[in-house]
Length: 326
Length: 296
Image (cartoon, rainbow over all chains, first blue to last red; front, side):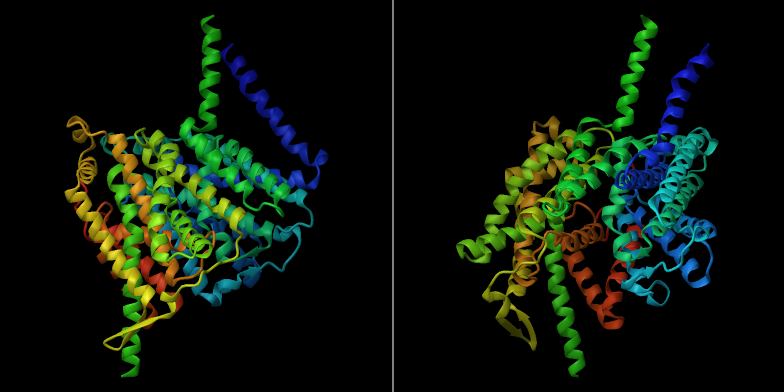
């Protein structure tokens, strides 16, 4: 009976949402499709952040740097060496992951807010280096993607991008679901809760933090490739923005950090909110959507510490336990 | 020898800029010391200070240095409101440091957007004689505005230090910073001290914003960002929670920028600052002038 209950309670809603997500572009207009698509991308980036930020408890504010490293790696491979981003995205992940490992090493010495500040400086440094090495990166002018065709991950309409990001988002959730029950994931959570105790039970703290940061950056780098393929154009100042780093972290925190669904929930709330308001008031009142974004962030952090997923789980959990008792 | 004096000139300008960095960092450092909170909106309070200067000078024609006092009071009040909304509710909860980072990020976004809506993104500046009058000491030229900004920065830092040492509230602030539990035991109203410290820190940021606007006339909604990063670099460099450290750290950062410009290029200047910053952060996370952190 337990299995049956689990099936109806979990799998059926998941299947319904999956079908809705899959057929959505058939019924919605291009604007809505584009909004949802961006929400998926940000959800994936927030989930990538979650590995080290949520499960690892290392509050990174430099993830835009990994996004940019990924975007630049695959774009340079595509434009200069004619290597398809379908291949390049893995290289992008590796380059970003290597940078992530460096940040992970730094996290051994930098605790709490020091780590956050260190990652900000790291991201600034990456931006300045991208600007400085003009020969490879195009400097402040950036790189325009001039190729075309699905073999280069470039599409004429928004719908293929929608499915690309939909799959990316689903892959992110499945990965986190696997990750949180994996030996390594459990070890990382133990390190977050109490480093010394984790060390006491034989977890290699050094290894956990460095690999955790590398995985997080690897995934963010892949997200960077997809992002670049979608906007067709990369430039240091539009990619390595503190705004992006904080947005990635904020989406995850609002949705619920340290859970597979937090990123998606946060992105589904914050991304459409800001994009929709931008479209609505864009010309007249630029900045209005950002105010709401700030207000939502403030309210969630002050009033709902576990994020929205945490709140839902507490509410639902209580309901179910009430039923059982009754 | 012309080149050499040009270099000296450049280094002195950067050292002066560094002194102002010290003041911009002071408020952050105080707030960190007392409540271990990272104030993410610091640069935006600086920006509001710049606009305060712009509006008071253009509307009422008052002197920008009087505007600095206006900004100190106004931003002090805004700071206290911010504290009540964004800091006090989360600061004592588990994970409070990260939470303050996010709540002040929310405040930062709100302030920047409000400034964009109210005052448009185009940069503004106001007329002031100090910017266009120059002093010459030992062959080094500097504008009066920069010289005053430097002197006022140093004086403010000394004043804050004396306030913390001699005035009763100042002593209470130090007590909370050193040992919040002990402070509570001896009857200090810790939440009230936190409120006053946040107000003071933000007020100082507002004043710094006015001083910056007297010689760096580029007042726009996102102007705080540059100063934000500079302030964080200085605070980390000095060691969070130190007072005099920020002056030296500010000047060192300023001179490092100057050296970077001379030895390499202007583009390389900032790269050098971040490299130095990261190296210091990794080798001496307590900062150059901070005491070693105890493991708790």
